[in-house]
Length: 296
Image (cartoon, rainbow, N blue to C red; front, side, top):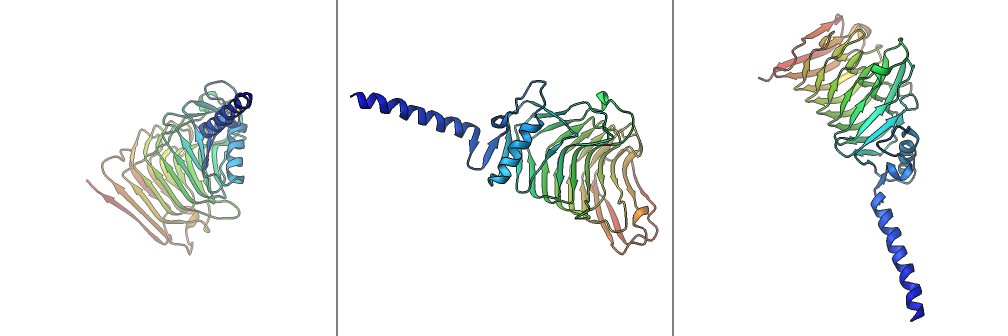
């Protein structure tokens, strides 16, 4: 009988360990709390979140999970997404940027990666009201550069020093490709709501962009390539609601791709929601078309 009393506690201990591992980490998912990110305190969670992403990437886990709460982010260090990773947020999860004095930052950086997703109603909050410096305009909520197969749904992004979402290129890839953004709410960002610099196969559906203000251009959504080698191809902007943006609603500023050999292909399907207007500027000698349809 003595052997039984020795074996039972060991068995219970093993069951408890397996239960705890299953609670915080499944076959395809890791939990940021396992890596030291404590929600709802004033301590920087960036390192713990990055460690969770790096661990998931190195061990071929598909998902990094955020339980609902407030996580403090050093946007200069940034959260750097890795290929083949989904960030899964409990609805109402908040990523709150620490105040800084930098001219540029990215709360979430999606750079030179592929097959990544952001799922869940995450709230990404910049630090413009607490920003220490006065110069610069490139503090971004989500930055997508030189990446492919990116899927983002239901984010709320507000109060950034620059743009809510930025989509562009890197030195190694002069476009982002196959990007889908569904139902974003973008509010009170300083430079732009959404900026599109270079993209192929981009769909932005049901965006709500309000109250961009602080430094020009201050548009709700701005399409503005930087050079002739960048792309605006197979772009679909569907059912935007854009209101109260100081610069205007939607801007196509095409000066930098005049005389480019790369044609543009953009379709905007509007109901009645672009109350700040649509402008197309410097489009002489630009190949391709911008098609704007009213679906009312």
